[in-house]
Amino acid sequence: MSGFTENALIRKLQELNPSQQSIQTLSLWLIHHRKHHAAIVKTWHKELLKAKDNKQLTFMYLANDVIQNSKKKGPEYGKEFGNVLVDALKHMAKTGINAKTKQSLHRILNIWEERAVYEPSKIQEYKVAVDPNDAEPVNAAKRKTTEPEVKEPEKKPKLEEKSKEKEKSKEKEKRERRRSESKSESQNDSVSPNTPPGDPPEPEELIKALLELESSASSDEAVRERIASLPPEVSEVQLLSKLEDKESAVSLSAIVNSAVELLAEYNLRLSEELEKRRKVAAMLRDFEQAQRELAKQAEAKLEEYNIKLQKIFEVKSEVKSHIENLPDVSRLPDVTGGLAPLPSAGDLFSV
Image (tube, rainbow, N blue to C red; front, side, top):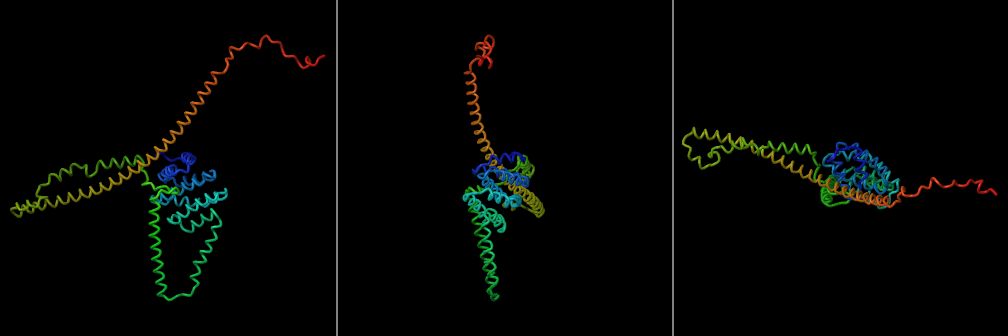
């Protein structure tokens, strides 16, 4: 995956289009370079202010995808975008967004509210930035919430019952919210494309993880030979009948104890290796998906530039044909030597 530079980000933002593949590919690249989150969000905000009206919504789709899909990795993007979203949404509202764009923005904000991406007060602030008329329901909601407090206090048992009911209702809401999140994340949504399996590792990190597996427990021949050379009495119970005296039993007991320690330690190493191999498998899967996405993007670019190259060849052929059809100036008669000079104005009007 290519390294991060501000110029590279500006170029990618300029090439961004509303398709799911374009948004998801750039989102994956931004999440991969999340350590530059401050510079990335600053550049995103600056480019959004310069973008045309029809592309500003695509910038919001990109921000939505990055914010939601980077939550598992850390809150950096959520916090950083939260600082500029009000200004970005106000700018979009000033440029005269149409009803369809406004509906799409409200859809994004409603999804954030359902998934608790931001606090309700923040979501309301964003909605007001899109449409100041949304500020009115907040006052009405506050009045409704304050009205029950003015009522006469009821008996303590009823208050306790009400508090229990409220807790139960809150738990139900949380469960329903989790179910809705899991359902919505599994669906293919044009606003928020499918969540990528994970953050693709750097090639050096992946190579290091693969090299570490070479010295894992399963490749430790010395320990495996020690296990293979253990006497059969250690694992076969029927051979215990051949013990003749106490000394041989004590000797076998010591061998069994050492074998138990050896096998317990080796099994622990194997379980650790298994966990490492699962992590490496996940890294390979994420790396492969990232490379496939980049390959698709490269193929699209290659096709685009092949078309441009073909057009250049056509123009070149036309120019060459035009040059060949021009007359040969060297074959024209010399008209500069023997002709008389043109008459002057006085000669023309003289009587």
